[in-house]
Image (cartoon, rainbow, N blue to C red; front, side, top):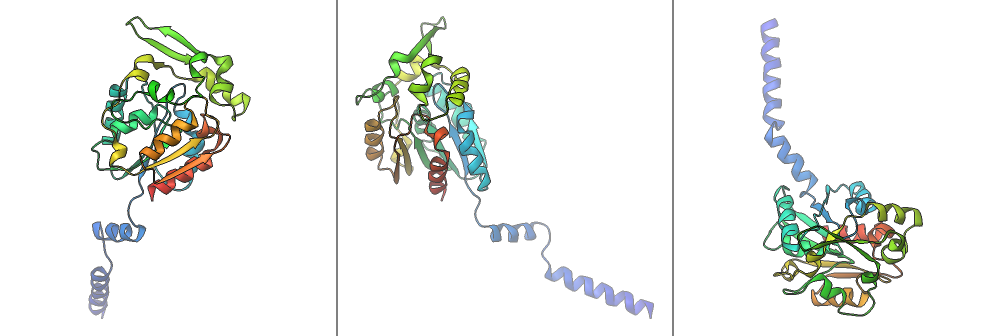
Length: 267
């Protein structure tokens, strides 16, 4: 009797094993149910800022289930910074959406070129250069930039200079729609950019082949809004979102708007 019961139990277990997927099969089924992997969002800060300038955007993207990397942009040269970003992108599996602020647009335009994993580019009050253009040239293409009068220089001994915004002028120049307290902190922690990075001419831009999206800041004193709109139109932006009254620090003052456009680009 006992032997019959044992065989009956074994038979039931074998039947279940044939029906229930195990190991890799179960994982594959779960993956199919979840759908394709969401893109990783890579954020590239610009001059006179650091990765923390994306904090509000990062928080919102993470709440929506995205993996996010806020890159520490070296701010030394377009070529060198793009090479560093390329290495970061190469370390990420699966699709990527790149978002760059200000000078970060110069860097992502170069770094994304030829990378099939980069599915979209988002320019946030950012430069979208054509081959042969520099950040300095683009910021002065239309009237309205007052950045030059606010800068301090640091001679670093190799013939070039590092540039920072004078702390007492940072709020009005860079972040006029951010709280005075937060702007004062940002002014103290800003990272300098080497002057040669602003004059280096861009190579072939990735926006020619990668779908691009734009957030333009209505009261930007670094990159005039006319320049931002002109670059967005030239790149045939899939979407151009204007934030009226926004300063250059639009990702800080309007993180919802910026995050929403990045999510749209990720779809």
